[in-house]
Length: 100
Image (cartoon, rainbow, N blue to C red):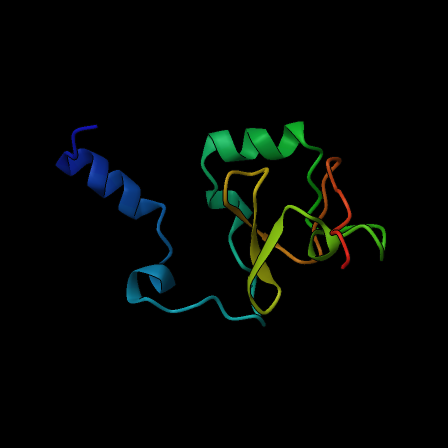
């Protein structure tokens, strides 16, 4: 892939300012803005039946095998190809974390 000025400017438009500064997301705020997600990520969330807030106390991203906690309630989901999510979210592909 050739890195062009247009590509870099486009990538920067989707990079939150906190990430540019090297800051971690604040746990008291949202981890991401759903309105600014790229179309492919919004489409993936729709296909997985993603909900911002789970209806179940047991089935939440924080208890899912695919969730990787980053800081506070923020993390990423392997099914969303590293897409940001919160610990309170859930999708139809939820799978319990294995316990030792």
